[in-house]
Image 1 (cartoon, one colour):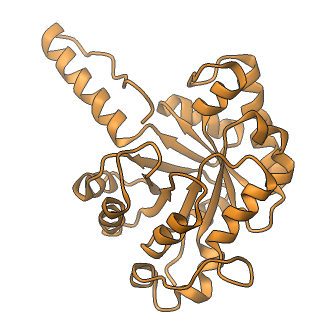
Image 2: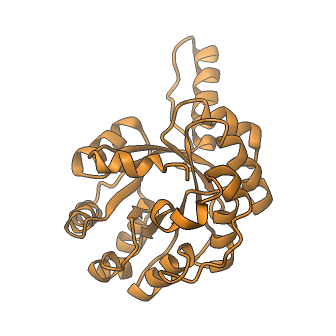
Length: 264
């Protein structure tokens, strides 16, 4: 079976540099994949991507060495299994708030006896190899999103679920839940403390922690804090920022601020 390079990066103590795909286009995904990301995540939650578009995007990513991941719209086993069958090598699941949520999520990603994933890998076997079914449980990455006050209260219980490989902080929702405003990067002491507590707890449980970032400086700060999976904005946000900067430079004869209108 094809190796999941993210596990090797984590094992060596490194941090994964992840890109984010919200544009429903195989061509755009192929273009992003040429940048050399460690992984690319097709976003079916807040991106404009549906399942059929995601299949083409996963195929496009597979033309490179970049690891294909997907964020599902919700904790719903059917879409999790379909995206794994389509060749996603990891699933990011939003709003995992309790141990029961996490157990249900992990179970959907694992074949029996570790879970209840139905067998039928289709494209996953083309991408990974005929022996996919033998090694999928130890290759596919499970990444539960921690993004609410409730999840923080249940953090140790969530992190202790067998088969959970990693967690992913949704900083906008976490900030919204804690202080009533989606502020990224975090500046409020309550949210900053939560982000620090999450990565510390993950390390105690030997679970890898990831977070969505709005700049390279922000990502480097999070890596220094102990996060080992950092996302840099998204294809939409990067395109938006580059376009604004180019137009501003032409009109003002000076570089414009390369700032997007949001993280997605």
